[in-house]
Length: 292
Image 1: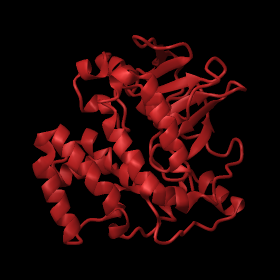
Image 2 (image 1 turned 45 degrees about the vertical axis):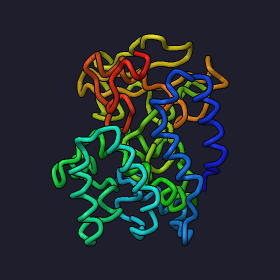
Image 3 (image 1 turned 90 degrees about the horizontal axis):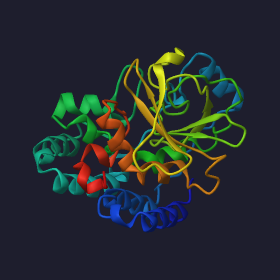
Image 4 (image 1 turned 180 degrees about the vertical axis):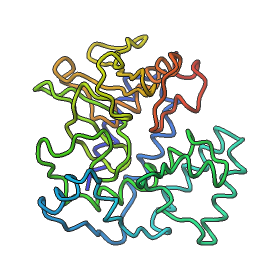
């Protein structure tokens, strides 16, 4: 399981370098503080050999599609509740949808499984349809509440043979990537904000719609972007993904920290008409609060 105390320290360092953004980044600080305090009541990990995992991957299935953990609702409430409360303060209009969702949770009508991706199911869209929670807001709930449990669940299955998984979706949980690095050998590495997985993927392929058409793939020059940082976008589906070229930015932080600490780049991409399925503060706050 990840050392969230180390991640929190890295995050605080990043916030210190972006002091003008610190107030806007407070929601992510709350999430990380919750992960740091989280002590799973039972450390249950998926026990599968590399060959058993590969059998699912060869069929194009993420492991979660056939091996979902049972996560007790009470075990994630200390993570989910504070984030919902903060979001309701930031966005008063989500108070009533959150109230409906919380009522269904308390009655046992919905639980952690509703925050997990599944074939043909996008949890933020499902939450919007069922309770009226805007999908851009609902996207925060799964990563905030479930990442510690999912990192524990998948920790023994992180060996992914080269060339086995070519899809943009996470090979472990099936969620969309939240960040894309160019690593030292020039290959592209995608990272999952939901379960913490990281995997190599083709550079000339959209991680969202899987198009290979090079004319559809563009690199945006974000306003105020530092050397090494970039935004990749797809004209076919209008999705975008931020990233960092670690050959140029060898001292960059981890993918989660770099993603969360650069909402001004999200604002730039959103202004160009692109979108991302994973959570970003830029979906919640006006551009002037993000230095954009």
